[in-house]
Image (cartoon, rainbow, N blue to C red; front, top):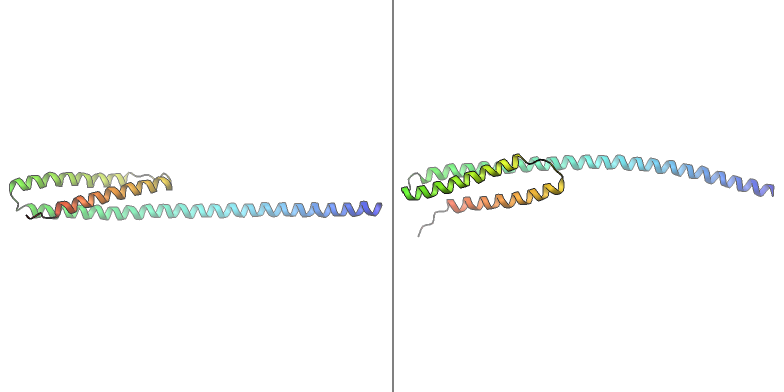
Length: 144
């Protein structure tokens, strides 16, 4: 009986020591997981910020190209008839405003999360495509 009690006590002590050791390991693993998650989050935030900055540069280039197209078109229509020139000037003013509004919209965008960024980017791309098409439509000479 005494041997059985000692044996059971020894097993209980071994299990307790193993249990403590595995708890310590679990805590250590959890701390490592938290550290990895923080590093991943930091990397994701940096990637997100870099993506926004890259996109801002791309759109700034497109807007500058639009401004250049407007300037070239203005010089091209200088020799047009008065009526045609007036019509073109109205269209140019509207396009300049849209181009300016797009620049302002991009400049005022604040980082509000990845999901909001994706929605903003999709809508902004659509609007930039429409603006680009309007420039193409304006600069094409319709000869009949």
